Amino acid sequence: MAIDLRSDTLTRPTPGMLDAMMSAAVGDDMFGEDPTVEALESRAAEMFGKEAGLYCASGTMTNQIGIRLHTTLQDEVICHKYSHIYLYESGGIASNAGVSVRLLEGERGMITAEQVEAAIQPDDIHAPVSRLVSLENTMNKGGGSCYDFDEILKIRKVCTERGLGLHLDGARLFNALVATGQAAGQYGEVFDTISICLSKGLGAPVGSVLLGTAKDIKRAKRVRKAMGGAWRQAGYIAAGGLYALENLVERLAEDHAKAQAIASVLEACDYVEEVYPCETNILIFKLTEAYSNESFLAKLKEHDVHAFGFGPQLIRFVTHYDFTDEHLERLLTVLKAI
Ligand SMILES: Cc1ncc(COP(=O)(O)O)c(C=O)c1O
Image (cartoon, rainbow, N blue to C red; front, top):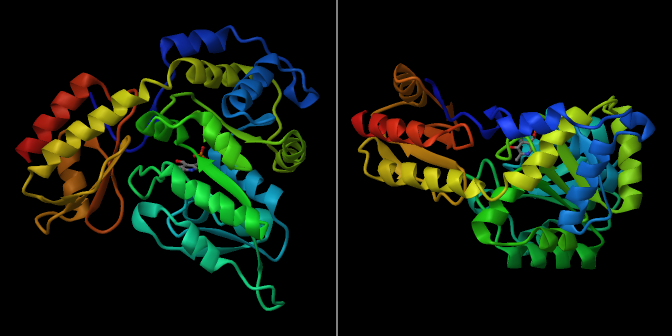
């Protein structure tokens, strides 16, 4: 059977999740009448200590709506150059919000308060208006890296002092919480808006939730409607997300342990030049010149193992619920034999 490490979005609903979905109470959510969507939104908001939540089709949509809420034409968003909102959302920052981006560099996809402070534009008509800082935690292209919470607090301080909003792309925030022992409420206190994804490591088939103040979420609903994203009986899929929040958060630690086990084996492989630090369920490693990206991926494919290249000589593995203990054993054997 194939071992698929391309992404944690590949997971399929568990039997328990499917049961919850099939028996969900539903209604027309555009009329505000779907009890399961409402239950998901209020449960997520409650976990983070936020006033309200909005269930959307994807993490791209919750991020893009978040950016719209904070900004207007001629504004600028400050973020890392590896940010999903910049690299992988089809230029949505420009097409949805009409704003520009100030890109920062930083270790493993993360930025510091000092960099943010230095990137804020002067009050000068030549410059865009710095309006929003967006962080990503865990950082996908940084190899599932986790922010030091003290740095986040420092960034919050700069944002407050300089009048900027603070958004979090928390597509894999639960991985960060499980790996670091930080609490959801800490994030709710610090960020103005948070996007959490239910369809990554949590294993739900569809959806993300945008969290914020009741006022922000009321506006967000209008923006979502304009994007064609209002739902009808979405309770069937929201039930999968709710089930994941209640049952599948703690088990993310198993994905992290599997990624660690792979990292340890790769450290000893002569075709690996470097294994990047692995904190959560994303593992990036660099190949020696013995293989190109393509030839290594082709070699893996011969063993029915699938992964993505992540830049020159870089390979990314993502562990997830459907990557079982048996898969791990087989993968380690394959990696040692190559
Ligand atoms: C860090 C990050 N943010 C946002 C998204 C967007 O999520 P979606 O695919 O649901 O639009 C992804 C998707 O993989 C992601 O990795």
